[in-house]
Image (cartoon, rainbow, N blue to C red):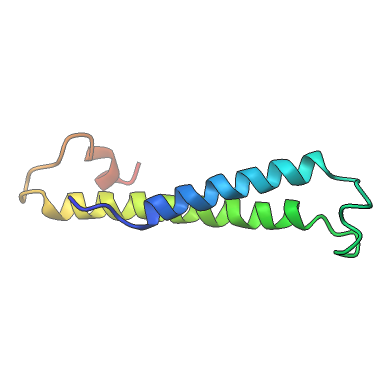
Length: 89
């Protein structure tokens, strides 16, 4: 089975968003650092945006791989651990 590109992209954006979010939280209230951005903590906000985007991409990639696994399975035969996916759990 081939790797869905949304999975490594999602991991990359999630990791980058996590770093920016943590940096934004730790530097929150530093007026000198955020003077150029009119006092807006751009690191925190863009970190959260990247974090949400990365998690979304990762989850969509995992869902796509599960769908491909179900389509490739022989009719009447479920791949290991996929019974819950077909029932909607």
